[in-house]
Length: 323
Length: 294
Image (cartoon, rainbow over all chains, first blue to last red; front, side, top):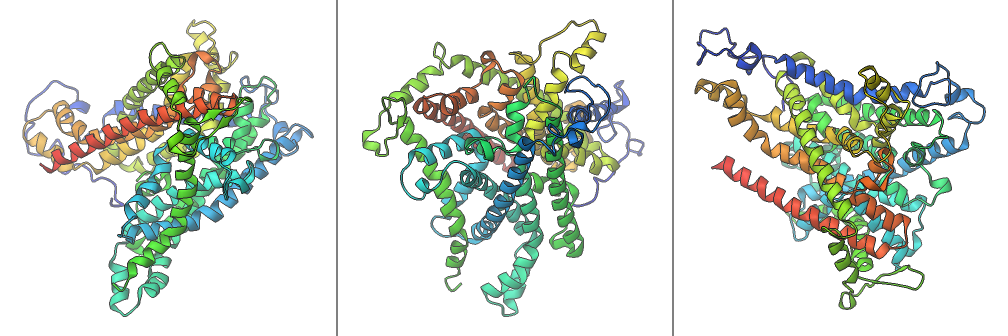
């Protein structure tokens, strides 16, 4: 995909070529290269629909009353004003925040190197077993998270064989669960970057006399650095937002994360707008991570020209791990 | 290449070992529990040896999801909600993806950013947002009141709310591949169809739509898979057993109740349904590719 916007009509409607079939249809329909207004309207309405409720939830975190559905004036009491119930004072929220960040850090530390190596390995390993390894890597992406969570819960609670007996529900199990699905995203991101780099750089290094290790160390790894950094940040975002696996692997109390708090309290009549505030913090933290990943890729893209450069659209694809 | 294959294999080893331990073995644990026994305290006793497998729970699970079975309502809800959600995602998402891919022009970057934004807002936060709006005293009821529509209970067992929430939650995942497919679509084919005398509607129906069919399928797969394991949307938006989906049944059996065997067996049912769907998807994409190649 090129970084340029789709070129405007090569053959505008006003060109000498006469319209093939005169029609009484409105202009936006007769010209597929035109800009149909109703499509534009649909798109903007969609965007408003997808974002306004979230913004409303953010606004409610500044509500002056206890309600999360009726506006009662502006205040910061649920953020820091209230000495007991605000996000930064209530241990329920601060513990969840700390635990979410702790899990994210551990997930990043383990999943990124694991996925990075796996991506390089899988992209070049052509022997027996490579097919199954490729398939295995895709399983976490194509299984409902619930099935993964159930299977991990059962293996940790029912199988009395090492290493599974050594893993208790709680932080360790949560990290393992999160790493297991994060790895696949890292592999997808790093592999798409590998494909974009192409084999030429390595071949050049080999022609110049580098051996496999040298070409890897001096050529491929520097080229892959932005992808590694970007996938670290994506893993961070995935971990912060994860709910199902984290809930199944939790042991209550100290191992509650922000998404778990949202699930448990979103419907609660006694829940205060502090919940909206903690959700807002989570969104901000995720967006900072993803924004960072985007900037890293773009900065390296500009620096290394074509090898790392890509358009915003492709970046979006990479970041969402779907391409 | 002087045994270099071994280097690349060694790179893969840690990841493969990890995935074996935490994907393959756990999958086997589901089988062992589903095919196992239950003790006097209603705790599952997994059977690790396939020779002694007991198919009772699996049979029970498969017969419970067909009409007349215990979980038939959940199965029916799952199929209905998922089908309606996919149709809604197509009806809303396709025009959006089409506009951004083909007509956005200068504002394409901005539109892409805005359309990708929901990906990075936690799903539960997006549900939380609707809980506030749909509350009995929330702004949806206030706004409907302006049009003379009376007070509605949206958050207690209302299937329309659940479908709306599922659509809201999953539509970005549908738009993404459809956008990518339309963006890659060769403009020259459309020019050709116009030059050959097709009117815009015809060239859309005969060229654009068929060519984007694979990405529509991909988008559908991307949203159908997680929806089959979704219990949180229902728990948050409905909170009533009337709108239970299969995910809720599994969650209640495994995490809530004391019937982990049946829960594990139900996971097997779920995976079987999804495997059939995936096989159809793979067969259809292969057919499409062959059609294109021909």
